[in-house]
Image (cartoon, rainbow, N blue to C red; front, side, top):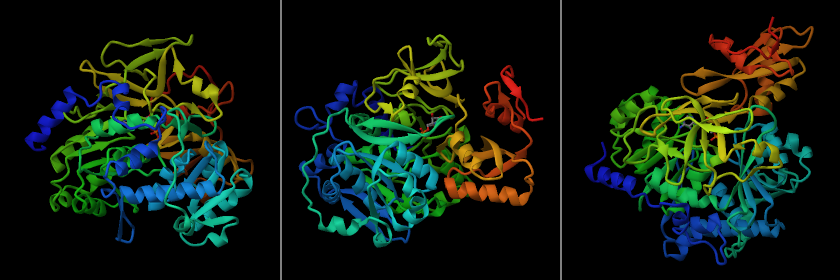
Length: 577
Ligand code: AMP
């Protein structure tokens, strides 16, 4: 258990949150003259102006064991330089800058520099293959891509011709000469001026675009405005317990929303020190980081926690983790066993919280001081109204008041980090709202004490190792293989990753369904989609179950795969036989 004074302080925070309304939260930030607001100003310039430039902003841990420290003043200089590079390329306000990078220092400068320049930033996950990268850059009308020569060659060169609007490729590290039209970014940054006058963005101006997936159709570009920083700032402090002088480690990759909202923005606006680890998961390495970097607050995900549980308690007991004060988890259901295990192994439990790309920030949480009920996501944060609802076909939404009844999790719109649109898809955006509610697509329950409990997704999307995967994107890539006639994709339970992707494939007439074909399709999917999205396994089928309108019934594929009840089959037209 944390020391007594920590418990008292946490309990005080619970009764007196640091903001009672979003207007009060906004007042904790500077803003720009004339009612403007810019995330990068709040994250960096504000602190430098207040004399905190020498504070450590980022401690970067390279794969090779070396470290690089960036103070708030360093980050400001790098961001200004990046903004000047963009200005030199003629990038205008509102244009889109994408990244396809690992967790390297330039990524952080690129995010902040882009926001200073009034352009919008969209991070791509570096494990994406060419096809997910292409489709997102096409939807987002990417004008600039920041990447490495190696990523360019493997992931962008095969699709470059399909992206005529992509004018500038900024290459981090060596090899820019091998990239058609490539700009050597490191050199350009050295030459660029360290002074930049921040563009006077409005709170409603687009700042970030995060792609997410639905059951059908293309990836969705969820648009977030500069105003989101109001929520990032206070939810970081409140739900993640940031305090002055803290060292915070968010293990999420900035290619996903958590790695941006809480892996970059929230710690910086709160002027604390954040750890960035370039390397992938490794239990020993992670425990070393927690100890050696004296991490106070740690934000991670259930897949990683389950892998740590596998490694046992011994590596924890062998280290001094006494600085660790608060641990939180997000992205997938956190098993109650993981909560009880962590309370025993670390002396403090993981605090689960819930949110999604569209909400931009934490909505429901086991905040410090709240009694943790293992398996529950906690309670809504101040300013957030959440309910369990039932939709009717007529478009009305009814609140379910009775405790522990399952329904859809819904939120009252109006918090600052709410997505403002799905790029170019107003109808898809409008469908998320009904009767004054934002409908999250998740199924949940609320108990008599007001705690929320996750039940499952209301749609067919897959959550694997915390990454949301749209089955349609996977099916489309499989269909491009010349042996495949039809494909249906589902998530199947996995003890570590939560779910893994499984594909059911109908082969074209005359194709042999042997091991060779299976390997060839799996390899094709890995190359096209990248390892984070590609299926792990493929089953061949003669037919797939379909509705009358010809849609593959993934729900039925899943029920059969898992031996669950098949449910309502009234729309089933053709079956597997
Ligand atoms: P994403 O938009 O990729 O961040 O995924 C958001 C989805 O992840 C949510 O709609 C949930 O389905 C799931 N999710 C996020 N946090 C939790 C949590 N604490 N417990 C259960 N599921 C979660």
